[in-house]
Length: 231
Image 1 (cartoon, rainbow, N blue to C red):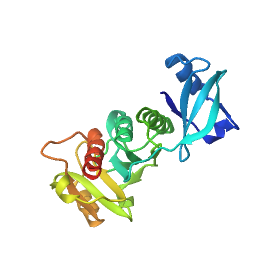
Image 2: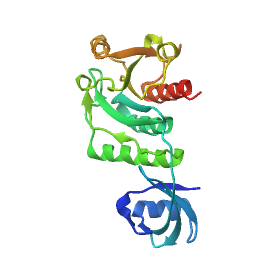
Image 3: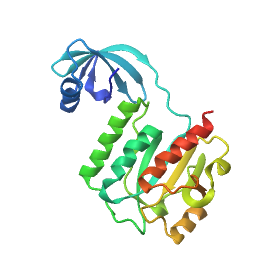
Image 4: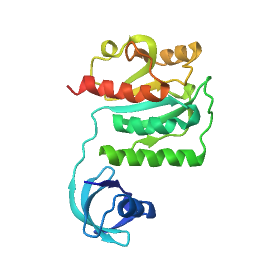
């Protein structure tokens, strides 16, 4: 069944007014017709069934179905990459269970700022990926940060993805409430940046014998962590 993420402000009683983009998606892309039933997801509340009334309006069933989020909150500190590969990171990372994306400017970053249009595009991608994979929460896209701003979560652990680190399976055996992943740019973190992160409490870990592209590493790490802890 088709699911869309909506803002609570779109709802008035048992009616919901679709945005023009949502109307186009349902009626033109997905070919939904009056009387068709779909799911509406309000973050933090659950999922309602809804009936398409036409003219960009839905009738919402008051009953909700709770949607469970993953037991571990994963934050991704990701160096900005050229060619807007960050958009791919948001899409794959959302499907992999990452809850927060924090773009980083590092010494080797080629891209060093985020335009409002690009930020808006990333947020749209996060919503669409949430709808597709049926998650309970739309990930947050944070403002650009620098390496000096980041630390492991207070109630969790920080992992620096590094081919020379300890194997992930060996280094992270127990479930954690929150995990912060740090991924460098195309050329990797500098030695000084790596030392800074380790001094801040990050543990250097490896994803195995292969070297992954920067735009893939965070999502792969999230999947591996959840695979270890959801057995």
